[in-house]
Amino acid sequence: MIIPGAPVPPPLPPADAPTPASSSISGGMVALALAVAVLLVSGFTAAVYYGSEIQAWLNKHGSTESAWNTPAGEELIRANHLHFLIASTISQCFPGVDLAWGRDGPPSNVSIPLILGLQPSGEIQWQSTKSVGKTATIKLTNYQRTVLALSNGTTLLRMQLASTAADTKFTRNLLQTLIVAVSALTTILVTMKSIIDTAASSRTRTMLGIFAIIVAAAGTALASLNTAVTPGESFAKAQHALTQARQVQLDLNLLVASDKRICKEFDPDKANDPLAKKMAELSNKVKEIVASSETTGTTSGGGSQTGQSSPSHP
Image (cartoon, rainbow, N blue to C red; front, side, top):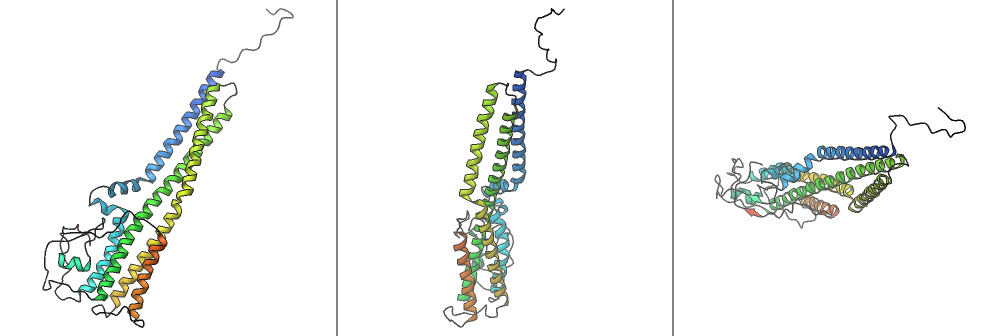
């Protein structure tokens, strides 16, 4: 019964209409669910994208055999093939020297002068055998020593650059992924804070605002770190230097394979000697690569030696 002149009460809200508290809770839960979803997707993407890099890092800090599966070890395998071809050409100057060895690696009287058996750690490993075939000692000419030293130095440089390129690539991709994920999370938090009903719980809005500020600050810090470290530029520089080092060793290999004077001496100080000019040119290229790369690779290439058997890698 309605009494005339009495105020009309406001209509009751529908039974399923959310209360301010329920709006606050639902808004906060949605924001939290979206944030968790972004983090899960980012984590899954990073795990898939960086799986090989993580495995390489574990291999680098694992056993000796697993060290061959690192970027430096894989680059050493390729470089060792070229160095072996150079050593094989030089060995033809010494009748009786046989480079066909078994799983135990080359004997010491062959591996030491020809610098065979280089390992990812920078060590040179060989058998304890003192002689092979008819020749117990290999006496190299100055030309042969120069070629082997240049090839070995280029091999060590390639290992260092490959390791540096892999590390900087991993850092670049990781920072970029984190920056994208943090930016997306910041946008979600700010958007959720703006669309939540103004009548919602002030605590929920305050928490979303605080989270948005913290995440935005983290994104700014990551962007600043990426600018300061410049992993992308470092990766491009290391990769370019690695390509140049590969070309130098290939040019050296072709020079030795086609040179009829490989068994003879040469005069490095003779200005009109084409061979001396070519060796000086290749040596200067290596020096330029080292100077331009400005890297401090993880593989030092100290070339320490140990009288142990090497794995079955040429």
